[in-house]
Length: 461
Picture 1: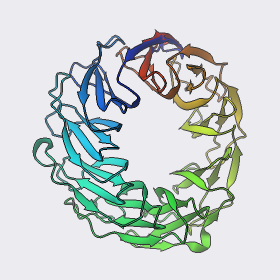
Picture 2: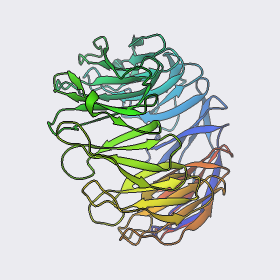
Picture 3: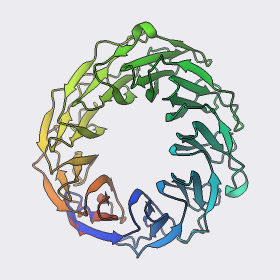
């Protein structure tokens, strides 16, 4: 834990032991004392660690609770409507979900396990039956189906409902949204193995229609989905990135659950697309798409026409092997900018946005060896965004303070644990100053650097 001074610098990290091979971390007040606590999923020990916060940036020794086999993701929320935070864990090897109801004092009941399909890829939480209670939707890669677990009275879960069963579908991506304007949540699936999308329209009571298949073409292998209004008609459309055919297909929605596949307007690439995101980068009320590729050192921005087709991509070079991307207004012009951590070239790329969907040529800033994660925030309380980067091979983080015009100071380094792979920023000790939390994959622990509010930080805990 690295406490922030509020000026972009942080105290040296303070480290706390947790279980074996921590894979996911969440922060929340689990004992209702207005102080943030830390919850860590330990994949190697099949348990979770609870570290209660004192409110001054330090934490109690961990308390462990057993969960399923190889927990890979942890979330916190009030799933039983008793005003107390509970813990939800996805267990990859045991193919189930663990729920630990909270007592509100930092302790938790013994886990309740709910079986789902095999090889869980993704879990989403939302109210799919309009009863004001959160439900679980799980994508199962191994069993090629989706599990829906509805919550009823005070956190109890009904028996699992399995949907979209299909041999060999190999689900890779699941998104939720209202595709037919009936105020009920629907599900969209990328079926990598069967080369199609599955759309399941929700009835609003937790049940769904049989999936409607939208073909993405032979050997297309869809891998990523983005929702947005790509033709300016104010209806939700679907964009799908196909890893096998190296294309992006556009499926335009009419607001009533029907989609027109725009095969004549598909976007082709030389390299398979890996991940896709959408957003209005040029303030024209239409969604643009940003695409990163498998093994390439650039990102492409595509701006749509009103018919759902796209202009030729604008390509922006970044460093070697980009691993992490953050978006924010780093030069205070109200336009979105892009910051990329480049693992292979040991630097970050900053691309300033013009607000019309285009970006300036990158400016590169050196950081440590093998940067794997980047976050943006104002760590020195000057109203200007700063950059924090986790350097995997140097076992440290780099702090680059922003001048507010899109340029940054030379990095300052702070030691953390072994092989840091993820970095987050937040005020963990309630002093109104941003602190840094780092997950260290090599040391099986978490580093917290408390900030002084001036850009410097205490030694890690």
